[in-house]
Image (cartoon, rainbow, N blue to C red; front, top):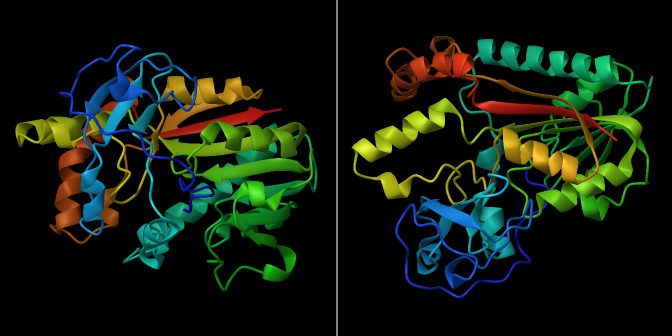
Amino acid sequence: MASTRTALSVSCVKVLPRPAAGYAPTVCDRRLIMRCKICGSQESKIIGKPRIDDKFPQIHLMDYHIVQCNKCSFYYINPNINLTQEEWTELYSDSYFANHNITDWQKSLHQKEREDRIKLILKYSNFENGSFLDIGCGEGIVLSEALKSGFKPYGLDIAYNLHQSVDQTKIQFIKGNIFDANYQENHFSAIYMDSVLEHVDDPISMLKEMYRILKPNGIVFIIVPNEDSLINDTKKLLYTLMLKKSKYGRIKPFVPPYHINGFNNKSLEFAIKSTGHKVLELSQFAGNYQFWKAYKTFSKAYIKELILYPSGLLSILLRKQYQLQAIFTK
C-alpha cells in the first residue's frame, strides 16, 4: 500500500512544554492550536506519545503528541509532521511494499478477498464496462481482477511496483498522487482505495477530489484500520502493564506502517458525508485471522498472534473489529 499524498508541505508548530497524557486542552490552549483535519474543531484530548523509528532521531526534537478530536473522534498528530522528501522516501522504502515470507495460504486468502471486493462493487454499480481507478494500486493485482470483470482499469501510485503478471498494455498507470493525475471530472464508474487514507496529509481534500472525478451514482470502496478496535485496546493494556502507557497512542506515524491519521466508525462516516458522498454501507471485518496457517509454529509472530487471537474473536461480538470497510456513492 502506498501513500498518495505525503505530508511535505506543512509547517512546524511552536514546541511548548509537554502536557500529561489524558490532558484535555481548552480552545485557548496554545499547545494544541491545530484544527482537526476532518471537522475543523480545535477541541481535542491528548492520548499519548508516538513511537519513534531510530532511523529518525531528529524527530525526538519535536514534541509530537497523538490527539483525538472531541467532536468527530478523528486521531491525528500534533504538531503536524514536517519531514523532508528524502525522509519520507526512506520511510517508504522498497521493503515497505514487499511480501516477506507470505505463504501459499495467505496468497489464496488475499486473492479471494480481491475477488469478493470486486463482486461487491459490481453489486452496487449501475455501470457496465466502466472505468475503475485503484488509488495506491501497489502491484496492480486488484486492477487485474477489475479487468477480468469488464472494467477499464486505471492505476495510481507514488511508486512504480506493478507485478510482472499484470498486463500493463491494458492498464493506464500514473506515477504520482491523485492531484497530479488531474483526472477528468465525472470520469470513473468505480474507485477503489485500500489502506491509503490513513497515510495522506489531507484526507478531506482527497475525498473531495474523489467526488469530483467520480461519475454520478458511481461507487467508491475504501478500507482503513479501525483505531478503536478491541485488538488496539488489548495492545494498550499490555503497554500499560509494561509501564509504557504514554508510548502507545494507537496510530504510528514514525514506525511501520506509518499511519499519520486514525479513523473509527464515527470519524470515517463524518469524513465521507462531509465531502458530499452518500454512505451505502459501513462495516467492520477482520479479527478471526487463522494465524496458524500463516506463521511457523511457535515463532515470534505466531506467539504474538496467539496472544491477540482471543481479542480478535471477541471483537466480532463487540463490533470492534480491526478494519473498517466503506462503500459510498456520489
